[in-house]
Image (cartoon, rainbow, N blue to C red):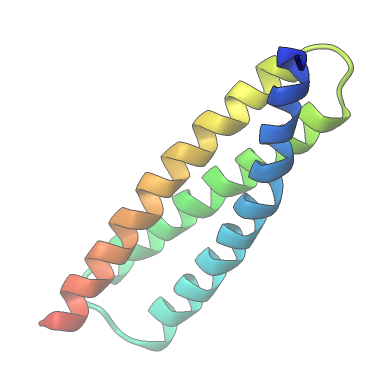
Length: 103
């Protein structure tokens, strides 16, 4: 039987690369917004920038969870929350872009 803290460490090891990949995707989306002109460009800029901050925060807390001897579970929970909010946020950004393209 494995220790619960070891299982939680594995989650951080998955959040870190996934959040960093999604952060890169946000940069691509941000560049795409700048190249194409959408009607709600400032709203999309702000939403994408906010999503980038969420994924960057998830990366930082996930890394802190892996490296920390104390409070690693707390850092991992915070990373998990930022990651999940980031997923919802990137979904909303994608839906807004899809609606703008369909017009």
